[in-house]
Amino acid sequence: PRDADGGLWPALAMLVPALVALGSISAQGHASTTAMPRLQIPVDALHAAAASAWVGGLAIVGVFLLRLPRVSGRGGRLVGGIVLARFSALALLAVAILVASGVIRAVGQMSSPTDLWETPYGWTILVKVGLLAIAGVFALRSRRIVSALRRTQGPPNTATLAIVRRNAWITTGITLVVVSLSALLVGQVPPLS
Image: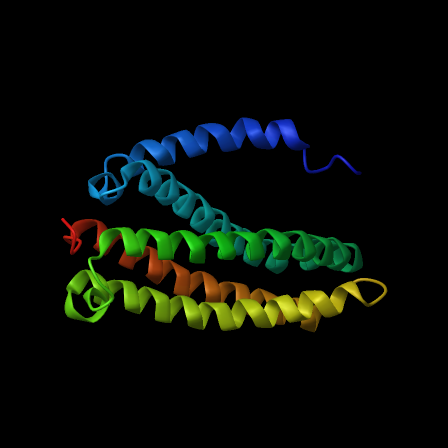
């Protein structure tokens, strides 16, 4: 049905408290110690929200694509294709927000670009960026498959869903390492502190 996603109001009812919670966490972290905390705190909360949507969504898509075709056969493959198309749009937006907010956060914590390779904080950011670039390759491969699926009639075949599922699991694994590095960043002293 058209309203199977619940609509705008239930989504906002869940999003607003989540952003408030993330904002309160950001207000206690490194973002609050920058020269521009009024910019950095909401950007940090937005960064965490985008990461949560992307990484959490990847894991859900991976499980969904694993179980649904087995349980529902051809109908499951059709629903899987629809889910991929919707998540693909969300993922693209989440990654764009992650990149933009990550750059803003990094600039806010560093005194110069050389801090990236002269400080442990900067090294950790560079490793995160490198791993996210690798995850991005897998995500782009999946996005190309999803774009091709939109042009075809009928449900995607099982092999295609398996490729996307594998890419989702690989990307999830890489992003979980990135989340661990983010936890490491919290414990490090930023160059501008």
